[in-house]
Image 1 (cartoon, rainbow, N blue to C red):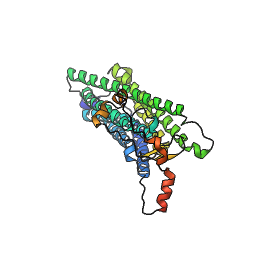
Image 2: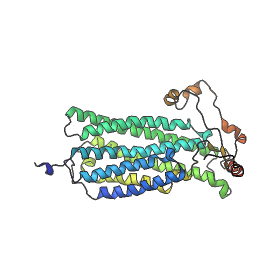
Image 3: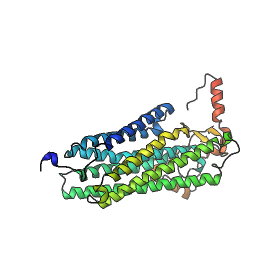
Image 4: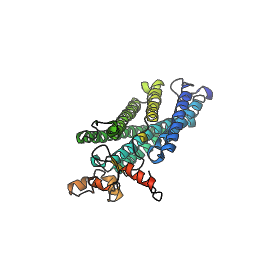
Length: 340
């Protein structure tokens, strides 16, 4: 068989679809970059353009690959890029939920900063397994032993992704239930009083929908890996464009329309008072334990067992200035600058 007749794809790959997805992800990514600049939120939502760039690169390489179906390097590059891109959107959810917990610290099940460090640590392991496993499975020169170990890595990474995200959804649900019981999300009598509660409701619903979308993609990958190279999902192209393409585009488009920074403060020292209406400037939530301990025990179970008291700055909210009032004072006093 001639080199040009050989194809690494088990189907005739579509030559138009990669261009379509490249363009729509490009438009979404440009908007995310604009929003990051506008809200100065690179630390919070900077992963959105990063995930978009990975998708753009992945579909660009795939478009070249479908015209050179025998080229192993292009084939592997497209697979790896499109495998690692969706988890980046999951990282966005970790960061946004962490910032939401900073916003309502007295109802947070764990230290808000530990959401990011714990789930990012798991994602680092997942990313390493995915990258190495995908490269071994896609390598036509790999030995049967290497291919087998690559499949094992991919299975482990996908399962770990599912478990990690289920734990994340559970954390979000526990926080949501605590907000409901505390009356933070209850409707207020006036639009002004209801404004902050409405913003909190929207960010929670946004995280739920995004989490479900990403979980569906993870489940698709679990089934795909378990079916193997001869399975239906691997031998047909449309499932890839539905779950890795359309689902992920819907997720990023949703975050374009309802951008998280429309509902959350940029500074994690701003928190919502227990009345559910007033935003105040607090000292921020500082965990005085060693970083390694916060990573190993993000829920501070040792502290609960030892009955160690935590600094509850929100119980002294009368000492903390109201956000609008402080801004007004800052505008009256030119010598005082407030960083938001």
